[in-house]
Image (cartoon, rainbow, N blue to C red; front, top):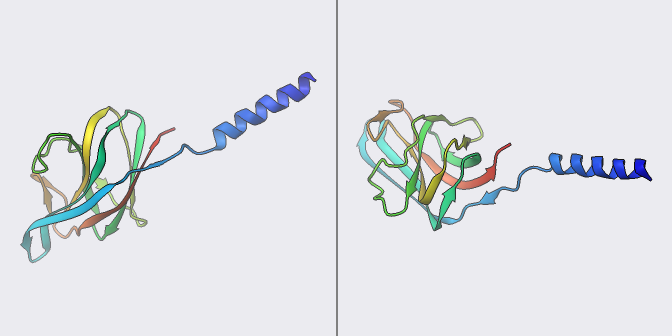
Length: 149
C-alpha cells in the first residue's frame, strides 16, 4: 500500500510540473499611429492595446506579444492608468529583437501596477531612442501573459 501511495504522489508531482502555466489572453482595443514620414518609412510607429480594465502586472510574469509587420527591433511600454499616451512613462529600457515568428517574450523583473495600455514602438526612433534607420513597423496581433518558470 505504501508503494502505491508513493507512485500516486510521484505521478501527481510529475503531472503538475509538466503542465505549462496557464496563459491569460489580454483583451482590449488594438490601434496604431505613426508620424514624421521619411523616405525610409515612418520615423516612429506605435501599435497599442487599450486594456478593457487596467491590470496589475507582477514581477515574474512573462508577456508574449505576437507582432505582425516587418520591424526588426521594438520598444515596449506598459502605460499606467491616468498617464497620457504621448508620455514615455512605462517604457522599458531595452529594445527587443523581433524573431522570425514575430513573438517577443518579456519577463518582468518588477511590478507594473494599474496598466491601462500595452504598446509596441517601432520605426526609426522612439521617444529619442534610436532603433534602426530601415526598421519597419510592428502591429500587435495578440498579447498573452503567464507566470514564468
